[in-house]
Image (cartoon, one colour):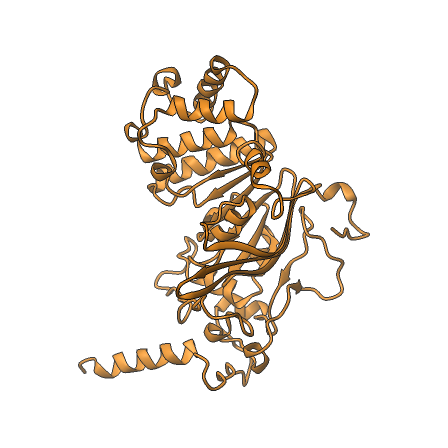
Length: 389
C-alpha cells in the first residue's frame, strides 16, 4: 500500500485483507465460466467496503473464494493471492482454512432459512459454533449465545434458544445469523445481500444492526449488494464490479459525488431518487450482461456503453486514478478514486446519464461481436413500428 506524502500515515488503516489478481473459474460440461478475472483490492482494519454490481457480476463468488467455499469440483481459484493477516488463504491447507472461517472471518448469507439447519435448535447451532473454535464449556457457550441473541434484539433469548429456525420470522432468522457471525468476535464480516428476502422496514433494522455492531466491535465489513442506496449509508468505500472485473473504486462520498465509469453512471440513473423532478424518467442500462462462458476480450462493458471508442472493443483498460499523477492510496478515507475506462463520462454527462460532447458516436462493433446498443435500438424500432397508429 502506498501513502501520499501529503497525508499522514495515521489516516490509512492497517491492511487486514489484500486480494491480488484473483482468478476464479468454473469448469463445467458446458465449458469454462470466467467468473472473476484478476481483481485486486485491499481492506483496512475496521473499514467497511461495499461491493456492488448486477447479479452475476462476480460479487458473491469473490467472497466465496476468499473463504474457500467455492462449489466443488467445478469452482476453483486459478490464480492470485488472498492475503489475510499476512497468510495466503488461497494456498492454506483446508484444515487450517476451517479454523479461519467463523473464528476470524464470518459470513452472513442471503437466505437465513437455507443457511440454518432446519432440524436443529438455535441453541445447538450456536453452541456448536462457539465450542468448535473456542476452548469453553457448553455452559459458557450457552451463556454467550444468550448474550448474543440479546445483543441483536431478540426478546426472551433464554427461551428462544430452544426454538427451531422455522419458528422465527425472516428478520429474526437474519438476526440469529448476525449473532452467530459475531459469536467469535471475527476480524472480518462478509454480508452477502443480507436483506434480500426481507421487507423494507425489516431491511432497515437489519442494516442498522450490522452497522452498529461492526462499529462497536471494530470488525471490518464487506457488504455485497446490487443496491447502491444500501451502501450509501453503510460503507466507507465502494468497489463496482462488472463481468468479473472491478471497473470503479472510490470512497463512498467520492463515488456518489463524481461517478466516473459509464457502468456506475448507468447504475445510478436506473435507480429512483427522492429528489428527482416529477415525471423525470429512469434511464435503463441498454442490453444485457455478457455471457461469462466467453473469455474476456476488450472492455467487458463495451457492448452496452454509449461512450465507447474503437479501442474499447480490443483493449481492456486497467484501474487507474481519475486524476492523473496522484499517488496511489488503496484504503482509508483518502483512498484514490480509480476507474477502468478509456473514455470516462464528463461530469455534466454523468449528471445527464448520456454523452453530450459534439460529434461523439459509440464506436461500431467489430464483425462478429454483439452490439447491445444496436440490438436494443432495433428491438425498440420494431416494437414501435408494430404499434397501432
